[in-house]
Length: 92
Image (cartoon, rainbow, N blue to C red):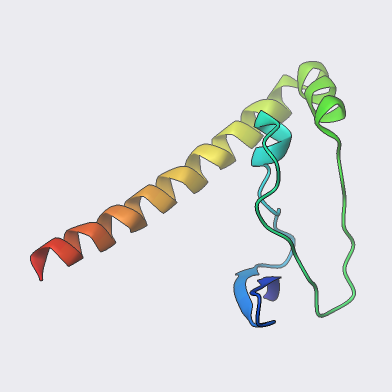
């Protein structure tokens, strides 16, 4: 796994697995990016502009479905983890 971002002190604050994406939400909703990334090994970065992504998803509906499913799985995972922490904190 490679570090996906560095904190203000230069320490890694999250890691991305090989061949993973780096948060597609801005391309979906037009929001500004809230994170940056640094790599520690040679890396190929693929960039797609929002309008190009929307055009591609219209031409290839299955692609849009896969992206939305992946976003839903990611949000569900985060919600479950947050809920587990909240429940654990309430028990203390």
